[in-house]
Length: 342
Image 1 (cartoon, rainbow, N blue to C red):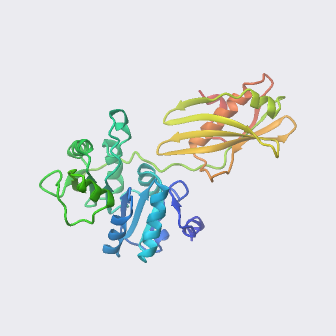
Image 2: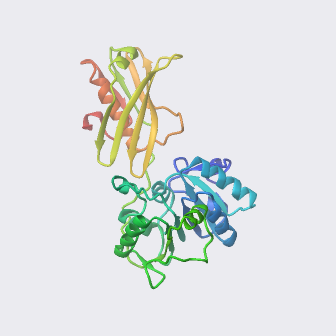
Image 3: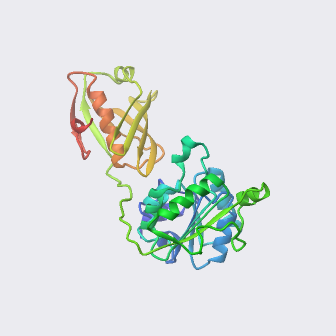
């Protein structure tokens, strides 16, 4: 039995950052069943109705909003459903990190945020890259359904679907504007009342091979670097300035440094972005022996020690060592050395 799974099952709140990568959904639901996913379940009406209609399936709703997560949990409990769960996290993290190849039987994306401003279009969920990712997680014959009431976004979705080699419409047309067979969501009803035209896309995964270039994030041993320096923690803290760097698809930013009042330790608030996840973590600098300090990952918020976190610690260590000519690295369990840092 996977005790990590048992631990998350004891909590009503499941988060993409804390579930196993990938997740064993059969073990989480305690049964083997086809997996159905709704991304952005909002008020939870569609999700609950889907779980009611498909008791033979394991149904998972994905949302970022904590408010929606709470509503979803409450509605699932009120309905007495045992085949539905909700996960807090964004779609990219959920699909890439938590789902194994060909593991999603059906996927629904209902009224995603249109990001209407031109400069924000890159934030839209549905694009060529995301459809490629979905093609690696949905098996041939699996279903993909999308709904939007935003005309500009509908045009972009239509163009993406028409050029993808991995999906095909189950209808004679790319989309339809009337669908009385599906349950209505709260946002859908608002859009219809305001006179907006809804676009419904009913597609399926075809047989075209899709290269899986979307590995689940790698979790490494807890990282640390030991270095020696004549400088005190206070002197190190006085030299701190906001700094950032990018290496490959990893972006690290050291945001702020805090000195602990209760013990000899510095806490560095750090932003780490690496596909497909982003973590805001604390890196710590603490004494191990006279003139010996340890840089490591603080456990606040239960962060995951990924390659991006290792790069952040390397970055911080390189900066700390550069502050004094006598400072040097004594020990490291990181895969790369500080000298390899840009």
